[in-house]
Image 1 (cartoon, rainbow, N blue to C red):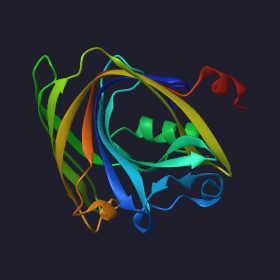
Image 2: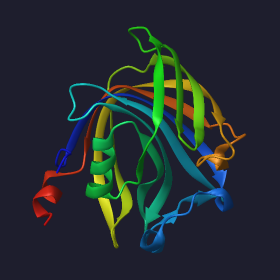
Image 3: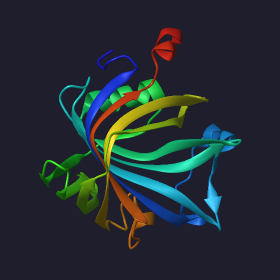
Image 4: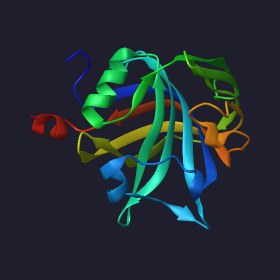
Length: 220
């Protein structure tokens, strides 16, 4: 095994945009997963979250990432399902796929910018593969809210022939920002091309635990 066992303890910076998308344009969920979970919709629209992430030294891995996830429900229980994700680390790709069924692909990512001690500043990010560009964005981060905020949620993915639900725990400094996105309409996030996010949040200096030790112990 060339990747760390779960849980993964990670740290870094995250820039999250939330979008409202008509149900007909939501990315499809694969096979058995689509029979277990359903997109959460209101007025015929679902919620998509996209995030640029820089995982920094100090966690089990450090790399860059662009992800896209849809808000779903398993009965009455809310879940997140990752429908598109690109990383610049083969180790992260392999671990994400084999541990949790997360469909990670390799891409060239550039994420950089400036921020002051309160987290305000501007970030420029881009992602693309040999097949072409995926997206670019400029994120303008506002100042942080007081304190550090906890966040817990579960990720539902198709792992082999079964649905795997994975807990995620995070604590971060939170700020409200804005983002201008340029999505390639012919790329894998083409359903977001020409749209604007509802809002953007920055999660500064986050500490995140993905997965659980109990699940790792029970894996054959």
